[in-house]
Amino acid sequence: MGELQAEAEVGQEELVEGLEGLGDIDEAELAQLEAQLAGGEAEAATAEAAEAAQDGEDETHLEGVEVEDHLKDAVEGNLRLKRLLSRDSDDGGGGPAGKKRRLEPGEAEKVAKINQLLTKWQLTADAVVRHVCENCTLEELETLNKSGYCPDKFNMWKSTAEIFARYVAEMKERKMPAGSACDAVAAFKFRWKLDFSVDKVLRGLSHKDLRYVLTNFDGERELSELIEEAKLVEPEQDNQTANALPEYPGVNTIGRFTRLELIDPLADAAVFGDANLTFALKLARHRKALGHVGRVIATTFEEHETLKERYKEIDESIKILEDHFAEVYHGVDCTRIAIDERFKGMEGSLGSVYYNFPHSGAIQGFFDGHPIVNWRHENLMRLFFRALRSFVKPGGFVKVASNMGAVGVRYSYIVGSALENEFLHIETVPFLEWHLHRYGRSYGDKRDVYKRPDAKNNQSYNAQAADRDMVYCFCFAPSGESIGKQHVMLPPTLKTLKACGDGPFKNLQGQAKENLANQLHKRFVTEIPAPTLAELLCVFAVCRRPQSERHPAAPGSARGPPEEAPGAGGA
Image 1 (cartoon, rainbow, N blue to C red):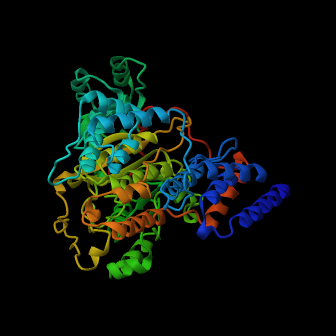
Image 2 (image 1 turned 90 degrees about the vertical axis):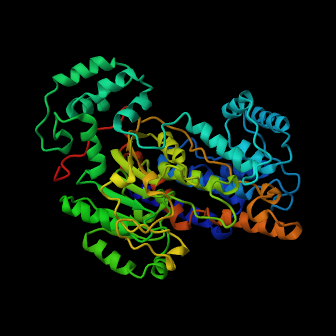
């Protein structure tokens, strides 16, 4: 132990020396930092960093060392986005003139396909349409080419790029479950690509039998065989809510678990992005009424001082939460919890996670669906679910509320990001049918200073149609296998911003347009902060620990949602 401690201290001293001036970090330092996190030799890290900076490649050097995935991905995703924003081919973008990025394997074919489409559409000069194409996969580009689709270039209300981006999003959504209400059977059928003939059979099963089928079906056995096996299983009398009402109709009974929020009474529950903390209050009171002993961890994105300006009652809300033994954290970025000191030691402890109406913040002059700003919303969901992987226990639930017609964080961003990170979609519940829906909705921005909802039955919040609000429900079912790096949507380059003629750029020319492009680009960069020294030391310390001292790895293949939590009281 003494040798390990001495080695860790020496390693931390080396890291501190190499991270001086982090606040003004540049591309070469970011690449070197990634190499250091991999635990490589100092000389090799410096050489790799120099090569990455010279060639302009978006590479990470976190291979060949046992590093916890959630720590690696948390640093990797944010640094990758920051490097993408910092590395511009534009001569005035801060990089050396003539510097070109080396293409990834297979990327040349994608570039050729993009050029082919833009030439076909006569849009080779539209930099924003090109940006949308760059965020498509090669398969999607080929589908577009074969479909005969051509963006509307003469629309009076929307730009060509915005119309094209919406079409691409809708094209992806055709391969996903619908954004409207979806019960447990419909979600199960879609997941396993079952035909309509099994629908009536599944809906006729009792609660006991349907839960057994949903939990144990693996796609290899015949469904009819599993149904017969379920009928022979005797219900256990172990005082668990999952075994309550075994002979009641299966679909309705399972749906009540989701709507009544019958969650694990022992596990912790985390709430992210709760601006005025009214939802966390609702959840804390709900758990207390059911006799739960698990904590409620309430978080806000804004700092406490900002919250006091917007919500005069915030201190009283915090006091009530603390009286319910909840913990309140401010300034929490839900995509970076893996390197947040306050979440250290919480790995595998969360039985339920909530994120209501996620949004990356509005940018004046642009609608949320415009491709210049929409990438921020999709990356929010991608990085959020990736960050949760090591904090949600297997079988734990994640619920994200959003409007099914939202054009910022589209429902497909939520569902798609969850599926990419092994969170199974188990149900979509209408928000107004959810037991926790009556809380004080807020806008979560400066409007809350002068335009406050009255928090009574949610009636005063009219920013969107409440009957189209949905709660997308997921269950964490890790396979135990590596799922690779988290794909992120490419941000627009400074050159693309300068070429944009939409939104606030519409009536600008010359220096005024260039200044606005620089300001917007700077905002994008500052919205993705580089890890602080304390965060990096935290990552470094965990990476240096022996594997046996880290939290256990995820269990093997989990093909269906595990059984519901043990007794949640009052079921």
